[in-house]
Length: 101
Image 1 (spheres, helix red, strand yellow):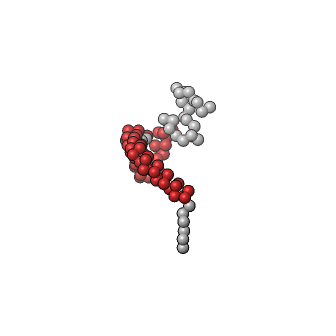
Image 2 (image 1 turned 60 degrees about the horizontal axis):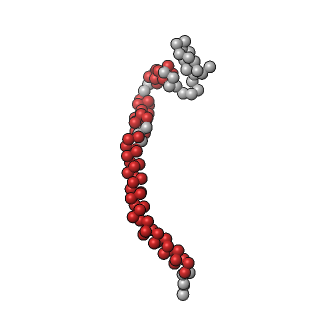
Image 3 (image 1 turned 135 degrees about the vertical axis):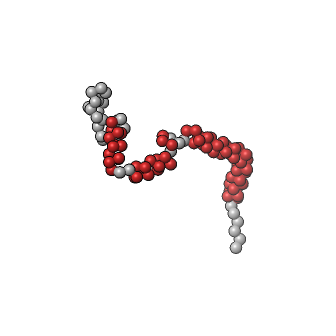
């Protein structure tokens, strides 16, 4: 079989290979910069509230180990500090304004 590749496919392959070789010294440091900045950002700002996912798992394990009375007490404590769920109204306290009304 006598297969001949069209010239435009060879030229396109050469252009792509040449561009890759030309931009390689610019792209590798740029990728390294983005990678390092991402690591630094996660190191300083990426843990989120309560220490990140590992702390949420630890708290979930703590919650599972509580008795139902302890959970009820914790929910009441959260409700009293306005940390309950959105569907639960805040307690009526005459010293604080009731914004849910």
